[in-house]
Length: 190
Image 1 (cartoon, helix red, strand yellow):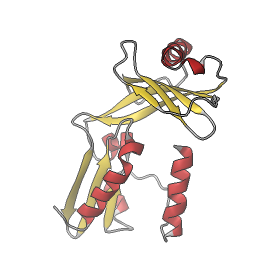
Image 2 (spheres, rainbow, N blue to C red):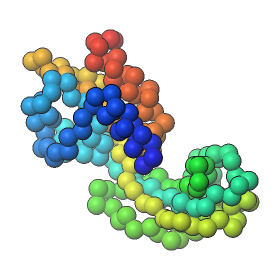
Image 3 (cartoon, one colour):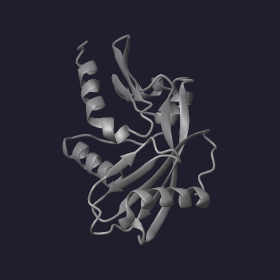
């Protein structure tokens, strides 16, 4: 994701977009600089717009060296011992994972027993992973939402607010479809 996000930022800026970083306490502050605001606040939506359906999901992954023979992404979310993901990147692989309820103050220190279980599941599914070199253990919170993604438009006094958050662990997967929907909503299409 860091490579993909950096690419998207470059594309945005190459097309005249500008990024301003500023902490705000409410979306009204964003309307001080724009008449259209797209709220992609993720876990921050709970505080920013009072959405009590936001819930943190703790994830843990292993970044590892990529064997030349492993060239296919493998995802099995119904494994009896937990999610099993082998995600192929250009020069490494990501092994996963877990997706468990958490709170915003969850421990983000990797749990080595969880890492061992992830590694075991992945090697059982893809034996070529047996001798990978672990490069890094990653833990983070995903911005999920009960009732699913919030993707809707609100208008008031000539101002337009588009909510687009709550994607959980599939933000990258749904990004282009959600972006198309945001444009459709901005253009007033039903």
